Length: 385
Image 1: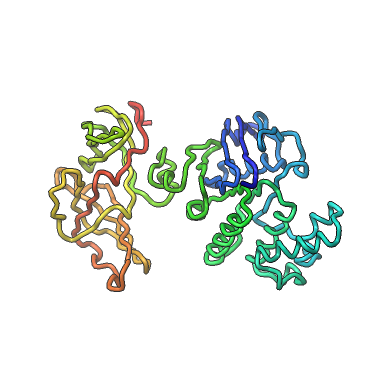
Image 2: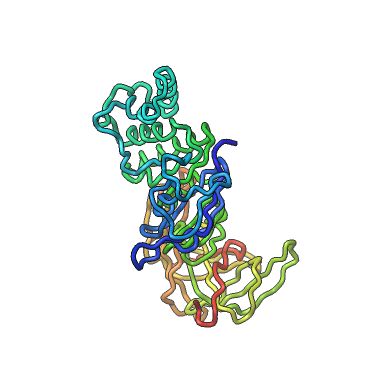
C-alpha cells in the first residue's frame, strides 16, 4: 500500500483568544481517502494547513509513518497540497506548470519529460500540454493543479475544497475523476470540504468537525445512518430530529443485545425505536428519522406489526424535484389535535409512472415508519443538554 499513515495527536491551535482546534486526535490509514467535513469556520482548513506545515500547532504532534514532522517546513514533508484557487502560474503553459516542481529539483530533462507526460495522461490533459491557464476551463485548471501536486510523488495529498469554484455538474464530474485518480495511484488523500454529498460520495472515512472539535469519525454509512450527535444528524443530509423522554425499555431476543424503546415526544406522542445503546426510563434523548425512510399515503397503513409508528396529518407543502417529491406533513398529536410538529418525507420516483406527486397540497395523509429505521442520537442530561 502506497502513501503514509497520518496521526494527528492532541493538536490545539488558537488565534488570539479564539480556540480554532481543541485537542484533535485522528488516525488516518495509509492509502485511505479521508475527508474532514464541517461548516465554514469549524477548523478543518487550519488542521489541513498544520498537516501541510503552513501553520504550527500550539500543542500536539503530526506523525507521518510514525515520525513527528511538526517543525519541518512544507518542502521537507512528503506532503503536497491542492488549493481551491488552483494557484497555477499564469505565464507558464500546462506542461511547464506540471514540470515546475521537478525543475526546482534540477531533475534531468528526460525524467521531466517522461513524468510530465505520465501525469498529464493521468488527468487526461496530454492534448492540452501547450495551452496557457487562461485557455482552460475550471475543471481543466484543477486537473493541472492535481497533476502538479502529484508529480513529486508525495505520500499524502491534501485537498483544500478543491472543487468549490466549479459549477454543480462539473463538480460531480471532477469528483468521480478525483476518486479514480486516487484508485490509480493509491496514496493517502486528506480532503477538506463543507459539502456533505462530496464527502459521502468518495470517502473511505469521514471526520465531522464543528467549532474546533471532531464530533464523529466513521464510514459514510456509519456517519449517515448512525450519527453520534444532534449536529451530525442535522449536518449530514436532511433529517427529522425530535427531543423526547424514555417511557419504556424492553430487551429484544437479539445478539448483540438490542432494545425496543418507547419515547414520548412533546406535542406529538409516543414513538417506538430500536437501539443497541443502554437507555433508562426517564432519560431525555434525541431521536432522528431520515425523510426517505418515512412512508406517506392517503390511507392508513394496514399492518399488524407492533413496531410501526403511524401518524395522521395533512400535507402542508409538496415540493416536486423531478426524481423525487419532498412533503412537509403537519401531524396530529396523541389527542388528535393538529400539533406544531412537522415531519419531512421524501418519496423517490423510481419508475416511469411516478410522473409527479399523487398527494396534493392540504391533502389528509398518514406517515409511517418502522422502529428499526429510527435512531437515538444523543442521551441527554436532566436539563436536556
